[in-house]
Image (tube, rainbow, N blue to C red; front, side):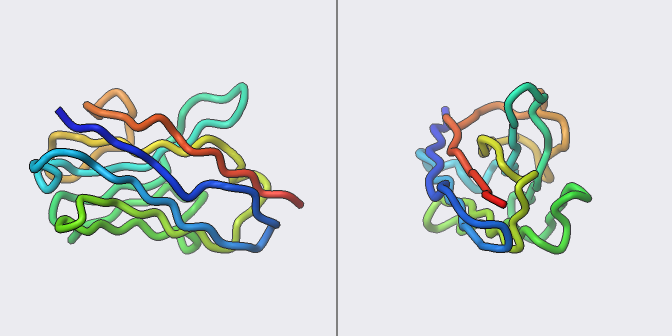
Length: 124
């Protein structure tokens, strides 16, 4: 069992930055690939980024590539999402998720555990 708690969301102006954190419970954090997803009102949950168990491989949605960076600290049991050059269309609830596989996936249903989400609002 893995429990995930996101933090770091908030209100920021367009062009600004935020760093999201996701703290995981349990001793098996390094056994899971981790992903970030987001969901805007009235829209489906969409993939943002994923990172492999070791942190050696990362994957990004085209919409965030070059602006967002996913990283992890397997000692602190935490995964991060650094978001730069934020745009109003990045406004959503952001979720972290754990996937019991080496590399993660872009499909939400492949993930085994989810956090409760943190709101990110980007004003124009």
